[in-house]
Image (tube, rainbow, N blue to C red):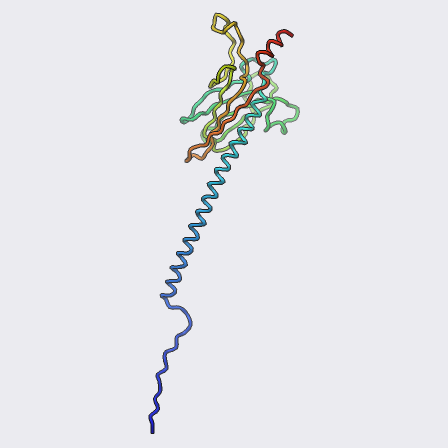
Length: 241
C-alpha cells in the first residue's frame, strides 16, 4: 500500500500593508507635500510682492496727480495779506524730506463734493509723525476768513507708506527749496529796479517717496504749473489798464 504524501499548506497572508510599507508611504507623502507647499508658498510670496509693488506705483501716480491738480488751482485772494496764503517750508525728519505746503486753492478734489457753497479751500500738505508716521496728510477747510488761515480743518489721509515729501518752487529764474513772499526792499536793498517778486511761484515740483519701512522707497516726480500766477507781460498790461 502506497503511502500518500501530503504537502504542507503555505501560511495564508491576510490583506493589508506591513509597517515598513506604511512608513515608506508616509515618507514619500511628506516629501511630496513639502514640495507642493514650497511651490505654493513661493507663488503666494511672489504674488504678494507683485501686489505691493503695484500698489506702491499706483499710490504714487494717483497722489502725485491729485497734488498737481490742487496746486495748479492755487491763487492769491484779492484782499488777503500777501505771503500768508501760499508758503512752503523746507523740513527734514530722520534724514528724509518732510516738507510742508499751505495754500488757498479752487481745486480741492477731496472737498469739492462735500462742502456746498464754497469754491475756495485752505489746504495744507504734510507728513504724519508719531502714530501717524508714514501717512501723507492733508488738512482742509473752506476758505472764508482773512484772519488766521490754516489753523483749523479736517485732517484727511491721502496715502500710506510715504517716506518722504519734497516741494521745490520756480520763481521765474531758478528752483528754490522753500517759498515765502516778502516785501521787496527797493533799489537800495538789492532788488533790481524795485521789481516785485511774484506772490506765488510759477511752478511747483513735487517729489514723493513711497515704500515699506524695511525697503528702499521708490521716488516719484511731477511738476504742477500755476496758471493764476501773473506773468511779467500780464502785470504790465494790468498797470496800463
